[in-house]
Length: 209
Image 1 (cartoon, rainbow, N blue to C red):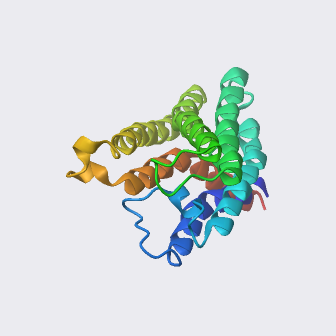
Image 2: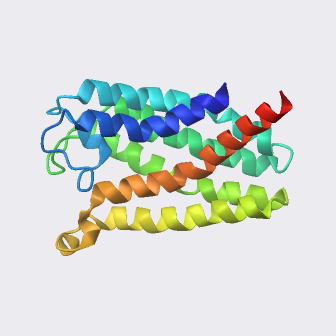
């Protein structure tokens, strides 16, 4: 059950924005971050902000699969990994859903400040989840899994760096300006190890049956 909740959370975090964007005229997946769908002027703000809250709840519950897989390998690392996931779930999920961002970054409100802090802290925490999972996999003598998760972390770090650089004036005439693209790619690589574990668990359960 928890594995399916995690898969729903991961796939939904890409599918929901993609579907909602079709009702938001002028929205660009490449140039605009996903949270723009929840700004006060967005026609789909209620649906997207509600999804963020649901996402956070799904991640909180499904993070328990990390305990079941790695608890006996390293308790401190397992706890740290789950804490990072919870920070993302609460900051970039629940808080970001309750407190929406504004359409323009120049317009600053209490809500947008809370959203900004929650999202930034959440993404920074989630960025290191693949690294921690890679270390846990190596400690479990699963070198292939460790290598896959390490590669996920490296690419997530690169794309996240581009994401941070994207709104800087000096990059507006370069490919780096695609803020929405870098956000999605970095998030995909952050999620990948979690999705890998969920699918692996489901395959294992099928073989047991």
